[in-house]
Length: 390
Image 1 (cartoon, rainbow, N blue to C red):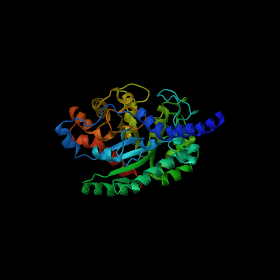
Image 2 (image 1 turned 60 degrees about the vertical axis):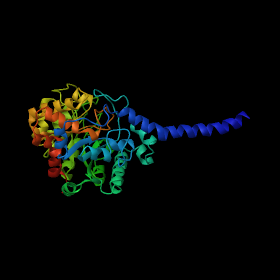
Image 3 (image 1 turned 180 degrees about the vertical axis):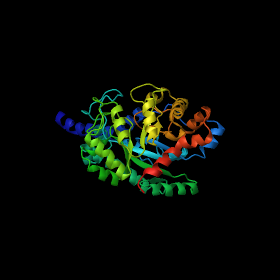
Image 4 (image 1 turned 90 degrees about the vertical axis):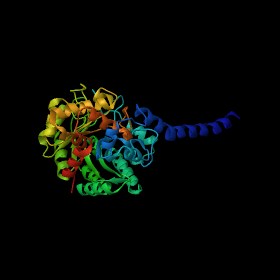
């Protein structure tokens, strides 16, 4: 009798455990990793609301594709989806894909010997090929964005060329529904699976921006949070050259000081920092020194100021605006942008529907309306227009 009970109970327990793993755990993990400190409705002055409606807003960095949500639906967790982007008047969102992160992740020192994303891929039922291949993880996330754009009825457009961007911006001027443009980026060249030839496949999938490193050193360069924190390798230098030849933008967020110096010395086109803080307002290993800020600006690039506590040493829009003010004072308004790091395992002061709070805080910092237009999106749109493939 007891054997029969075991034979009946065990499958039920396995079925129950599988249900939790595949359908409950992913949502719980995302909600835990990406909290929002304030919930809508978001407060702002009438002057800020009026100006905000006139802006073309662009954000350099969100990791929303990692979590498996349908971004065409308004979510009850996380920071970004198309409905909330439209509510926040965001014209363009760069979606960066994460393919590997170490356990015990921190901003000081990580090795590449562990991987959090494998378990997440299993729980979110990613294809078998993604379990072992980082390139396949990038391609899978890109395919999900393409599929969402295809069934969005024009609400979401995937941008691959400067021509695509120009056409989209013209359409957005005429479309009261406020469609959103998306550009694909990659956090860390380990997504190449160690083979530079894979850059061609990733480019064909729509990726237009990539960083040499994320939280650990790679065969292409050192990370600010890596073990050795070295510079660009021979492969890394070749990667930069190939990216520039294709019209892919180099993102130096998370790069070690030496990798950043090497890449900037090699670059013939603008480089980006997609999401960061500055040590002038929040002094830690993750953020940029004054000299690094100036070096990026000399390339003609832009620096995306993040929203999370390690970036700004604060938990509200005012701390973001202070970091923006410091950076503008250092290198000029043409080189500063938004780089939220939404859905990047960080607590955000508000989700993307609440960006009017940044507009309000920038007014409070004394920025003129024309300067705010550049910071909130104009600078990013200029760099993309001038440097993406035709």
